Amino acid sequence: MPDWNDKIFLVVEDTASNFQLISTYLQHTNVKLISVIDGYSAVAEVKANPSISLVLMDIRLPELNGLKATALIKQLRPELKVIAQTAYAMESDRLMCMEAGCDAFIAKPYRRLDLVQIIEDVL
Image (cartoon, rainbow, N blue to C red; front, side, top):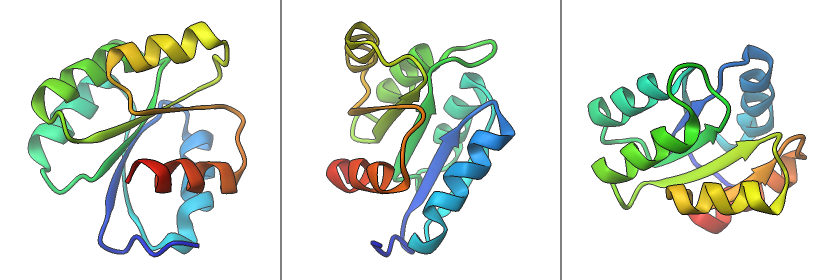
């Protein structure tokens, strides 16, 4: 497992069990996780916290969806890496995520090693 003790990841996920799964998957990496449940909160958190080094963005969110939130985040911090994580696994869904500014895409459900690898690839 990589050691990300110097990293802060923002997890944008409206389902508590999904956040808990991500937290469990990444617990041995020593990363600090910040959790928000909607796109507006994600944008606000990125504005308020320049130490965030990566965003794990669910796409289907209440109020402001993950695609729109990603576009706003990229306007604020174009260099900030965003990984789309979604149950929508069609190629057209991946393309929509990439067009919105996501740097990578992972379809739910995913395995721990797949998540760690995709994070390693974008960091």
